[in-house]
Image 1: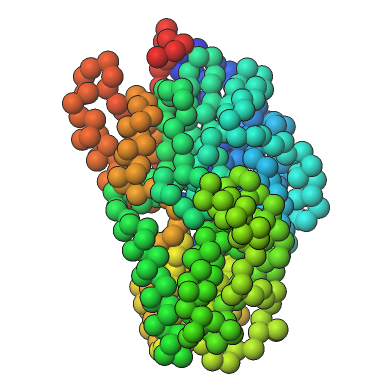
Image 2 (image 1 turned 180 degrees about the horizontal axis):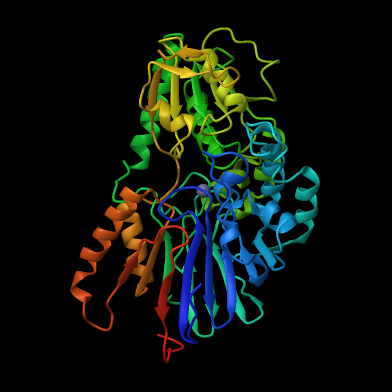
Length: 476
Ligand SMILES: [Zn+2]
């Protein structure tokens, strides 16, 4: 690694740069080292799903901040804490920690992360590692500043999923904002991302959707309910692959309300909705507990009706498929969200040969996963238990995004409000990220050559970005 001058700020990623997955970014300034997120890559197995931890001395890290509980941001944390020479302190918000516990226990069990497909004993971590690491994770409240070894940081609402945070850090007079994954649209249950009151010198921002534009929320909700209604009326089954937690609860709020409004032809068990996850009940408890951290709208409903909005009238829980009677049309929300393995994959293989059935993708599908492959509408798919045999795919496949990432316009507006002079793009495949970079450079083109020039970086993994902060002004 290159020698740093006293005024150099250094950024580089061990994962999650020019890709979506295994997010992990390192910041160094004035002898302090911070790690942002510790995810895995859902398209890979075992050790190859990890960020490139060998490329960095993890014992030098002072603080590790986790933005939210999704596996591509948090699932390698037990590995970092238990299997490496990392000795720093780890922070996340309360709901993130509550969900992290259940989510990762499930993750150890149901995904192939624990052992590679070669069958060799290559466990990344065990239940015991998870439990031990859990006790050493510290929690932060939104909007309250924590200081560790001269590094100050504050969590702000990021939207996206329950507990998701943006972190603004302050080290020796410079401020850095890390968005994690964020959304700006008003949601059924979450606060949207907020702009921190203090300006930032460096912005590290996601670029998932590049320069693409989302359809307005109301029309996406209408499309979703229409498409599902039309399918089940014709006797078809609908599979919605979802992460066990997070966006699934948003889809459930939409469907539960729609079913109540159309009880004549859908209600009373005519077309059952299932939420299939071995975590279902535990997860719903967490959501029911943290209603106070959600937006005014859902808190008002909670107050007015005196019933918890996450106790659904039209949705029942399934722990596994043994208890599932597959007669007639139904709607199934099942995890994991990218159909790599587990319940959602089993149901896919059962239902995909039938032309009247529908697989509806609502999340962001990472390159290399079955969910991404399915959107190419292949003639057949490989069976998970017997890769030699294939299964014909005749079902309909559709995508309506409820992934809760900003689109181009939302991202641009937010970036303009932050008005940092240095923008580092992360969490996007190369093409959308490259297009976002060009769009940002042309948007800020008039500032070129002035002292307010905006610089935009889209580094690859393990490529350093060095910024000089000589004679820094403490406040802008
Ligand atoms: Zn996420």
